[in-house]
Structures are given as C-alpha cells and as structure tokens.
Image (cartoon, rainbow, N blue to C red; front, top):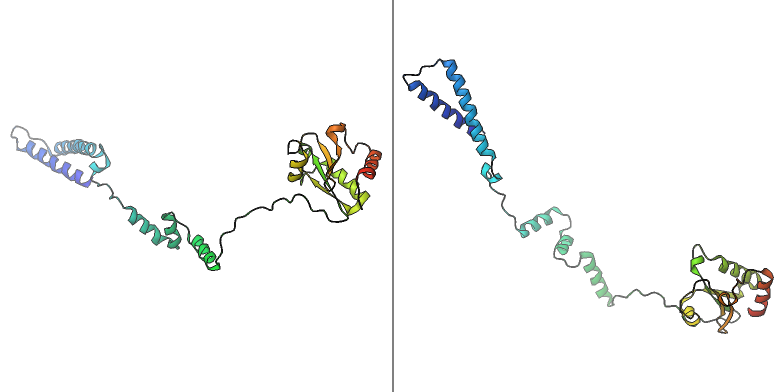
Length: 230
C-alpha cells in the first residue's frame, strides 16, 4: 500500500507540473492542492482496485512450497516422545508392545494359545448318592441368572426342602436340550422335568396342560413318586 501511495503522489506531481507549465492556465496554490488531493484519491482507487482483484498470487505473494511426505514424517517424529512406536504405526506394522510380546513368547518357546470356552460336559457324570434333574422352561417368562424364572425357583425350593442337597438341577442345558427337546432348544410354554441318570421324562407341562406347582399336595405326591433320592 505504501508503494501504491508513492506512485499516486508521483503521478499527482506530474499532473500539477503540467498544469503550471501551460501559460494559459494559472491557478492559486490552494486550488492546486485540492486538485492534487482528488487526483491522488482517484489514482489510489485505481491502484487498490487492481491490487485486490484476482487470486492471492497477484497480490505479490508466492504459493507456499510443497513439503514432501518424508519431511513431514521426520518433523512428527522429532516432536513426539516415543518415535519408535510412532514409526511402527506410520509403517503400518506391529507396535513396539506387540513386538515385545512376540519376542517374549519366542523366548518361552511357546505358541499363542487360542482362547476357547469350556465345552459343556455331556453326558453329565453323576456322583453316587445324588440325583440330577434337567428342567426345560420358557425363558420368555423369566431367565437366569436375572430375573430368574418363578416356576423353576419354586420347584427348586420344594426339592431342597424335601431332599436337601441330594437333588441337583440343570436348567435349559444346551446338550440336554439337544437330546430331550424335539427342536433342540427350549420351547414356549414348556416346563419339562427329566431324570438325567435314568434318561426318563418325569413331567411335561405341554402334555398335561397345567403347572406342576399349581397344587401343593399334588407336588408333594409327585416328588414322592418320581424323584428318587438316596
């Protein structure tokens, strides 16, 4: 902008000098000053307009030089505290911690162990003096561990009172369902009790049409007849 102002002042002086050099035009100094001011304003306007219009390089600035990827990576590594790990990430390889774990495993001479869940045991080994029952129930009416199924809980409580710890119960046990249930899964509206040791169906709500726990006297009579506890 200073350069523009200087150019305008030079052009104004040339204009006033030319006007004074003409013999037929003599103006007082004040009028010449006003004319010089207007001339400066117009010249500045033209210069500024030509200065603003256009892209950024026309204003006298050059575009920023491109920085190579190598230079950028070097700058990042210098700023970070742990450049070794970052270098591994940039190369899209294993991190330092992963490499350390591999080296430790190699020193132990072992291989990575795959995490596998405990396979459900079937058939169940039944200790002497115990009775194992399997109960298939409708999980839509409550499932374990929470909130639990009221019909199953009441059945467990009744067995505990009568036979103490001599009777154990498995509920909706997958291997048992594959063997006992026609669908291989628990069914809606079901409550079936099976003696695992004897491989015998003791009660089926789907067949009888009513719950085993509807009548307390019937439940006690049923346990005396079908649940064999030593």
